[in-house]
Figure 1 (cartoon, helix red, strand yellow):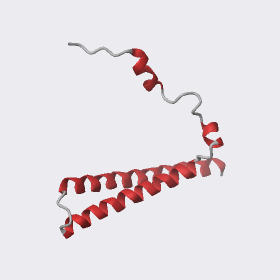
Figure 2: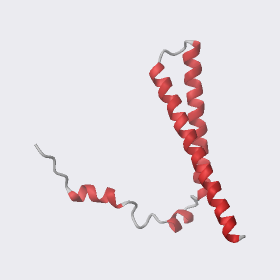
Figure 3: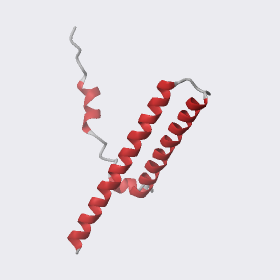
Figure 4: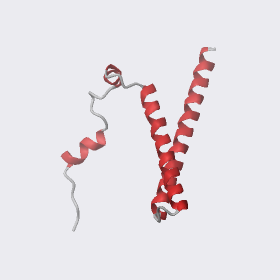
Length: 102
């Protein structure tokens, strides 16, 4: 039995953000790049702490959830790699801007 999708339901998700969600509005609400970056760093730190706590609990015998511990470790790893990539790209962009202005 074929599945048909109602275009009115699917289309809004595919269009992206609504026109009202533009950068100037974001700045007027006070959520800037610096705040988003700080939130991302805090989230990465939290992932690392959760992974460390899960690993410690498993090693000390307080937990037998090997699966959950491995998932926490992988999430922390992916989060840290993403943060490192964002840092590298931001530095590349900064250096490019400096070359253009120099």
